[in-house]
Length: 258
Length: 345
Ligand SMILES: Nc1ncnc2c1ncn2[C@@H]1O[C@H](COP(=O)(O)OP(=O)(O)O)[C@@H](O)[C@H]1O
Ligand SMILES: [Mg+2]
Image 1: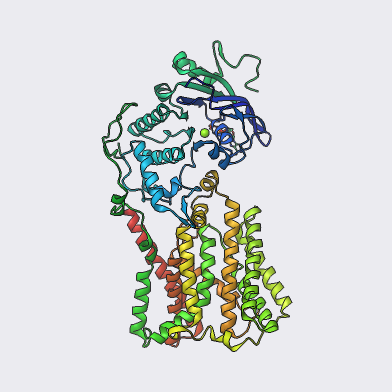
Image 2: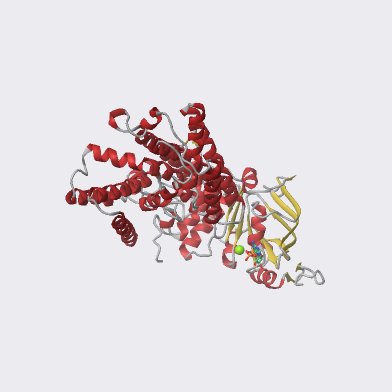
């Protein structure tokens, strides 16, 4: 798909009290592509994602979805658009089972009562569709899952809804090598199936392994959005650490570090 | 790798072939890793059985039908109020105003009954009053950045003060004989109040486990932040459980009015500890997210048999209190240790 971005933000500002965390941020996400969102700790990646998800109201800026200007004022609005987010620390409830987690807040009902059979079936289908082999029971508590299994369930929760954009906030941060590879493979497959995927990661190897585009945040400003094939590791590292790299990045006098 | 990566173990290429095997829903029904269902809710049942066995040895007449009916009818008021308390505690909240709402609901009902002669109108008025109080308390507790403990403690004083004021500190009586009969007799020799409690437990357990609202209650208690980002209306859910608690407290107050043949503002106060105690003893977590009405039912019966057994043994009330405390501690420890060792295995 070589059309315009499915999701586009322009001029996003966000402050917490007196502290401005996001400055005039632009961000575009394309269907069928993995966009890596990178940046140092505290650069504002999670804040940007929470603005996209409607958790934080934005102070200024425009939010476009499929070319149309939209207002997202809560998690339900984002979900209604088809934007699903796996948050960094808040993906799942430990003492609920897998199905309960996947349908959290959006249970299927038949009449007045919950339709457990349909929910189980949809959960199973989705996990199957992800070629996930690691989960043995849909009715086990999430607390009993390994880190990789949890991420898988969280991703399954995100793709259950025919979503168009799936955003993953550091899904591999707590994982070992093999599980990281599995999650990355899953991320790639989602994009290959036509979804727009945003992956937040600190690992340059991972970023270069799966992404089509890279967006680098530097101190709350979008330093650059580039095609992965057109940059090198060291250029991206420079964008992350200094906000610029040669012709790329925030121009001098733009006052990135104030 | 410490975590075993089941399945093929290796990483597939991005364009890997579709999965060769399919997870069949039916297989999970037989899966041992499955989340414990209602059976897990009966973890306190062995303690109840042991208690009854011990009492049977120590004294006579514990397991006679008339004594069992006696225990049930003595427990009906606490049982009904504990339904509402369970929903509140499942969200991680606490309602200290329960006892005062029992008084308010009962007094309202008795006042309407004595002035109109209609028990039905009285019951409706009492239930309306209790639910309205619960809704106000819940809305404040959910919307303001004040902990439910403080909000409901304040409500306890305000509600019981207002009820005392409006009833001039008197017991509202007399109520019709047929209304008193409600707590004494009924089908099969079991009082209507007990049948009512049984029906309410069945309904409440179904609502908790089978409806979206029940699931919402568990979600808010399990992890309020995850619930919020998943689009759950957290404040609305929290407010609703206090309204439900007000509803059940009022019903309990009406049943208590029937049992006491009249209503006073202070009649529900002493029941608060038994109500919360029954919920917690049943194994519903005070942190929220885990528990059920089935658990509370066992907790109510446990407390009911403790006090019944000690009356049969002819113990003085101070001794009763000490022993009640000890038995609760032992029962809770046995349950806690059981869960702890299961988690380690
Ligand atoms: N809810 C909040 N209130 C106040 N400050 C916040 C809040 N959330 C994030 N911040 C601040 O915003 C900055 C960016 O944080 P974050 O978006 O989490 O960065 P990243 O995810 O890139 O590591 C940090 O300085 C952080 O302290
Ligand atoms: Mg972050």
